[in-house]
View 1 (spheres, each protein chain N blue to C red):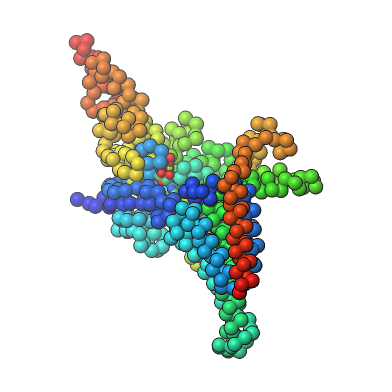
View 2 (view 1 turned 180 degrees about the vertical axis):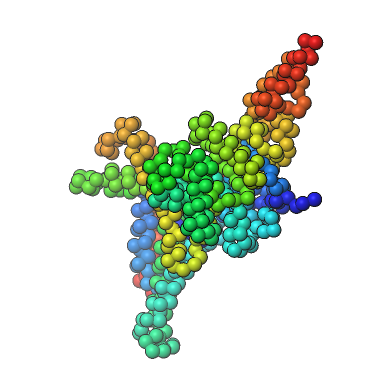
Length: 290
Length: 267
Ligand SMILES: Nc1ncnc2c1ncn2[C@@H]1O[C@H](COP(=O)(O)OP(=O)(O)OP(=O)(O)O)[C@@H](O)[C@H]1O
Ligand SMILES: [Mg+2]
């Protein structure tokens, strides 16, 4: 069996260790993320999701334990060169990524990442144009200043700046926060397309259980710096009480299924999308009338 | 490395010193810095050092943590003092080479200067360690109030000071976030030639300035929307209260001074 693409081994992390401000943000994290998978990380505010992401990209180094990304290992003693190699294959869309824009033109800003990782100006601009098309930005915005755009457009520029690096692993930290419903849907569908068409390994941090249920093949649940469960969405959302104990909500479709169970319906597996719910209800209604 | 420097940070251990009135703490710290310059012998320095140590211990901040916090600054002072020792003259000459020499006076002076700086740093660190920045701003405002009669814009100055202090941690957070985003896009800070290093600051500074300006505008709008129109005649949410403990602190400081002068003339 092939090794998983990413592997966390007994990872712990403390902010500002050895001071009165020390905060133990993560403890005993063991997690495997297979190649081409779509993993959602969910959990209450402050449970350590953003910290995990920063560790994965070597922006923070683990206090103990290690993280393997392909053949590169991140530990407390990793060198800058090793981290550089890891960063070149990981793209991160941070929370409110439009805060990272700084260049004079949209095109230059998007080409910034590829250029840092060794692409020539020409290649980088080509990648940037491709990324603009991918996120649905009009080509004639290329020479505009990113600061003259609307909030939603700025978000797209920032996302394009990450995608232009052609990462094989894409990390998303609440990428749709603050977007309108249509923008949210389009953005999530964009990532889904990258996952399906270009086999990008996606890791999504989210508070929207609907997104986790719809897109992810595995969900990692965090609570108080611990990884409490890793399983398929249907398994995670099968037990409403357990979800509540971990400060999580249930996707609306699953919620509906739970309510219907009281009226004599049974669901197996639990429906995660509207379509699955409709199919199961239809089947049961039909068998009743017969 | 800067995350280790303690000066300017508030540590909420809620000790006796924390609960003193910020006006008392501010004035007494400044006063202490002045009387440090009255010390002139090892006995006087020992006395002031003992007092400072007592104050540090009574803040309930772990001593090791305190020491780790001022150590980076101590290295800087040590470096200055060593230069000072090599370039001063007078008294017995222990060692000489060209214009460099180590002399008795130079050595003694160097040690004194080192003690002076160390005491000043310790005391001012205690002040910021035990007093929230906004409280320091309030204390400054209260102490400058008499100047308002001379048409000094005291309220505006105090408001500027408290807004600036209030946004230091926010901007630090923000710059950390932006730095992370740019590092993820392949910027390598702190490596390469000087020019390269300076250039790598641009992708941090531009977003930081933009967000700071946006924040300032938002803040101004929010203040105007809630009817802010200058500080004159505004009542205060945080009131400063002078307690018995503050008077006691002043008396203690007076005692320290008396003993200092006693030691000074004994020597
Ligand atoms: N720079 C920091 N210094 C000290 N503590 C921090 C720092 N950043 C985060 N923490 C603490 O670490 C813990 C985990 O934070 P983290 O940002 O990973 O949470 P999160 O799961 O991403 O939360 P959210 O859903 O609100 O984004 C929290 O208790 C937080 O207070
Ligand atoms: Mg977060």
